[in-house]
Amino acid sequence: MDLFSERTQFLGTESAFKIGEDIRRCEESGMMVVKLNLGEPDFSSPDNINEVAVNEIRKGNTHYADPQGIISLRERIANQVSETRGIAVDPERVVVSTGAKSIISYTFLGYVNRGDEVIYPSPGYPIYESWVTFMEAKPVPLHLEESKRFRFGARDLEHLITPKTKLIVINSPSNPTGGVLTEDDLADISRVVLTKSDGNMRVLSDEIYEDIVFDGRKHKSIASVPGMMDRTIVMSGHSKSYAMTGWRLGYAVMPTVEEAMLFRQFNINFISCVSPFIQEAGRAAFENRENREIVASMVSEFQKRRDFVVDSLNRIEGIHCVKPEGAFYVFPNIQEVCKKLGIIDAYETLPDETRKSTSPSSLFQMFLLYHHGVATMDRRSFGSIGSEGEHYIRLSTAASMDVLKEGMRRIEKAAKDSEGFRGFFERGEHFYLGAGEH
Ligand code: PLP
Image 1 (tube, rainbow, N blue to C red):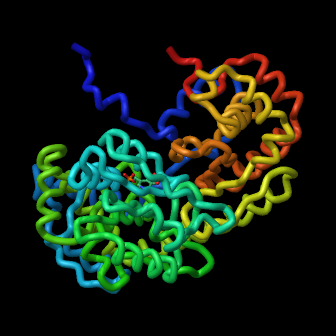
Image 2 (tube, protein in one colour; image 1 turned 90 degrees about the vertical axis):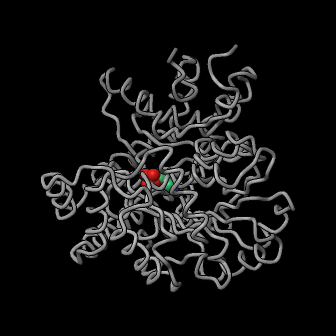
């Protein structure tokens, strides 16, 4: 009998958590690594929010709470989602959980059977693909294209929907591309969803970056399109908006109370509840008006950094980068650099087994890290199924301007360093993350 269940072999991961080991190895060898790999704001959670949690702990608010989420927070979330999306939201349809990530798990566990088809964005947040394969569902990646600024519409989606489609995941603003779907895109997509699927198919709308949009844009949700709230799980949370990633606070607005009850039951089975003092702090995040300014100034800083990084990258020969409209990532195309440095040819010479674990963009990522001391994420980290031939990396702008400047300087140097790449490749040590581990 095997130790682990058969299903565990299909579980993916999030390389953003894996790269730490490689960075540590570089640092131990004396390198100063510029970290442009981070998937969380480089700001701290606001003091006024921290204070609430500390006071609640002191007051003894440290016991189990309502598994669905305390009613005062659910009411606040209902108001917030209702105001920002222009839809009616009953707190009974709100479920609070540990980070937005739990909502992804519950959605897959609650709706998807083995063999069902799941459409999800690629490149996209890697946990979507991980759950598709883990549930032994059929992955149907919706490939986002640079030429469309990583947006998509009805025509891109329509041919992917079949009678077996159970779930469509959308994510705007997007990790890793920074693409933002417009109101027209969402209306277009909704038309297809409403005409091509029955009432038992769901859309998971991952809106975790809802507050981080640039150039005066306003976040738009598919749930605002008439008829869509009945079919959409709106998912968001405090992690990115309030720089509260370590607090683990997220939520879903469900199409029906019945579905909210299922997610409540998942909470009971997995976590019992979210810590009550964290929920109180989460409520304060919405209620204290000071936080609106704090969020706005963080977003304006991210926008400044985006402008700097995109301009710098576009000045490097062989790299071109679309200007993201939201989130705190940029997703440059590195195909020409890969060609110029001989990475694509080098990749072709690798044995089949090694080739399966890497890609030209992964080799560039590892060269940047081990040879030039810049940590980034490769294309494969954002859904590997069908990603062959796509040459991109993700850089995070969750780093100070000084760090970003140093990062750009190093990437520019690396983009000309064919000699360096040859040496790196000949050493044959780090062709993918964790390659040196046993
Ligand atoms: N969805 C996307 C697109 C993300 O980028 C992330 C975090 O990086 C999450 C969900 C998870 O958010 P949380 O930390 O609240 O679980």
